[in-house]
Image (cartoon, rainbow, N blue to C red):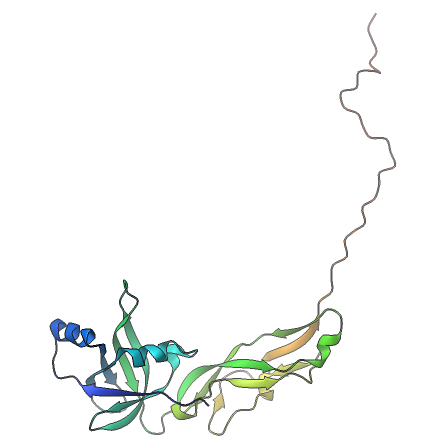
Length: 214
């Protein structure tokens, strides 16, 4: 698992549009934390720090730590966000706080690693039917991806959800028989041969054989 992001935040004292504009001019974003069995808290955080999280592969699904002055670390995830339609800039964010031991359902990408043995056969291709998988776990245990070694796959072999290996405390939320990847052979369609017509072509508009009336 990659290192988790930590974003420093400060309590937000002021309210209203003027205060929000001043906060944004300073390169910060108003945020509100909800959930976790406690009251909501209004804060501000650096725009560049939150933007860096949104640019990651997991984006809004990224679980990160918020380091609140005088309160310590708290795990959060984006619950909602407001983007400036003109500049494409984050202007407000609602964050969801997690209680200790709470599990959440997340979608995790599946990465296929290695060169499948069966690909040496003519027309063989590696088909990936499932590109991400839903898992239930504590935020801190959410994997960045589930990696599968496909080097041993031959034509006709398949990897199912039941074959996936995940860490302790992570529960896969997909049907065990679902196919993740398989090696198939694609047959090229044979074109039907064109046959030559042995008969004489019909001539339209030929007046040479017209009978004349006497």
